[in-house]
Image 1 (tube, helix red, strand yellow):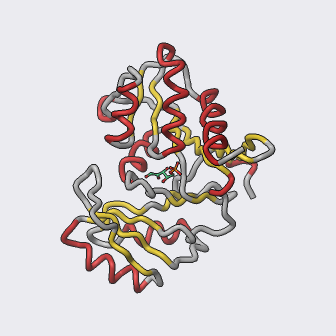
Image 2 (image 1 turned 120 degrees about the horizontal axis):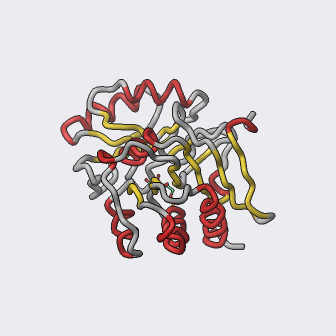
Image 3 (image 1 turned 90 degrees about the horizontal axis):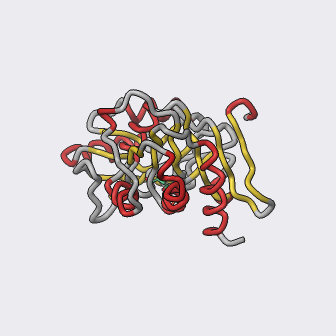
Length: 223
Ligand code: 5RP
């Protein structure tokens, strides 16, 4: 199976977590796109979707799936999204597509986070993938200097503006041994909107696409 087939397999496996007659939160990226295409097949059995980016909203609507503003939502049973890296403890780096802030917001509302990923995303330690940090434009140099103090190499994502009108700094060279601590430290830097570390609120379930089939890891089975 090639990487796209693995992504499609986990996207299909995620459908069984979607609650009928309820809303579902939908992430951003190529794996999430496969999930949207699967979701379209059951669109008449859901109430609609909450999108984590403009790109995802456009794809959902193109399939005729109703997109609902998060502010009008009380209950969101499930959020389904990909990851750039994930550990067996279900802590993640996300934001390769630049949607980290909205992804974090939708994930914060959802009761359950289902991560869908091909096996290349499972890592023993986070940090090989440059860590995305969304920043207010006037804080870009300040935040960059703080990233150097934390041991990273900040690189401004060239020509990229987030859906929220901000910039992304990708921080290379970090070996993230304590993702919860680093997430808190970066969140505390003035000018940071959000960091692509999802450790305090990691995934609840990982559906991992492997050559041998889809593996399911849960918070209770971690360790
Ligand atoms: C977007 C994300 C994506 O989930 C992450 O980049 C993985 O993308 P893909 O499924 O294309 O590998 O966080 O902001």
